[in-house]
Image (tube, rainbow, N blue to C red; front, top):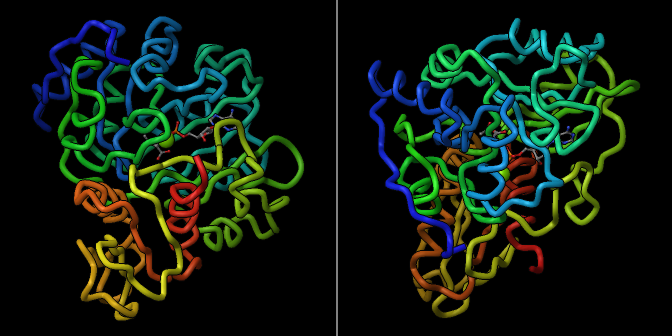
Amino acid sequence: MNDRPSIPTRRLAADAAGVAEAARLLRAGDLVAFPTETVYGLGGDATDPAAVAKIFAAKARPRLNPLIAHLPDRAAALDRGAFDDHAQRLAAAFWPGPLTLVVPATVRTDVCALARAGLSSVALRVPASGLARDLLAQVGRPVAGPSANASGRLSPTSADHVLADLAGRIAAVLDGGDAPVGVESTVVACLGGAPRLLRPGGITRAAIVAVLGCDLAGDEAADPVRPAGPGLLASHYAPRARLRLDARHVEPGDAVLLFGADQPHGLDRAGAVVNLSPRGDLAEAAARLFAALRALDASGAAVIAVATIPATGLGEAIMDRLRRAAAPR
Ligand code: TXA
Ligand code: MG
């Protein structure tokens, strides 16, 4: 990863000039990381195989793992796939917002085959972030955007996180401050039959079931060792330190990730401590998750002990990310 020529990565401000410059770079085939409400995306023109190839190279991401195409509004997204009844309902309820729909591609799908990893389906998303939507409208083409981290590492929720992983490998990052949701979008496949949850995320399972009025197919999303979709590998979102989940006690020197008022035994022996939400709020915890893991990792501890976090509501996405971070590498 060190043999690539280094390019100066610019930090663009979240103003009209910054957005215009980001759009110009994307239209020219360069890579620009951009903020969404979930995490920062590593943007490239989804219609241009050369730009998409640069995304895979910058992230060192396996090319078998397809990318999400981002659109500025619902109409632009609906135009690029075949939406059955379920997909239409979910799009109406949750776009713009932290939901990605995987639907069959059509002849009107201009997301290139490389971005789709050669699949006959396409992953589409309309982010809620106003800055992202301004940018996407100015680009005027779908923008492919995986999370803007090195493949397999923690997702970025700030421009600083992006630069820590990708400085020298991308043209610019549009700095929109901290991402408010903090975990990635929920990915739902609507490919005929019952919709399938491929990745829990910013929209809860309960909210999706309520809109659909029917159950989701299967439940592979709950099982990190049996991937439901390409790229949903067990080991992912990995800090350098080893994670110990549901920790009831702290070993000397452990870094500790807390939630709510519970205190594991021996907390006074901890090296570093972060509480995701002292008041036990899962939305607050999700927003802080990746920054907290980065901070605890930076403490140099060999182990991050993670207290019990309920896997309900947004906790399902939080625990999904933590289980993948804890999986053997
Ligand atoms: O919140 C998010 O979704 C962020 C922001 C930047 O939008 N993006 C993101 O992208 O998390 P990425 O590439 O890290 O995750 C996309 C997931 C992957 O697990 C990929 O395998 C899955 O979506 N995916 C994409 N296209 C698919 C397809 N056609 N079929 C099945 N899964 C697909
Ligand atoms: Mg990712």
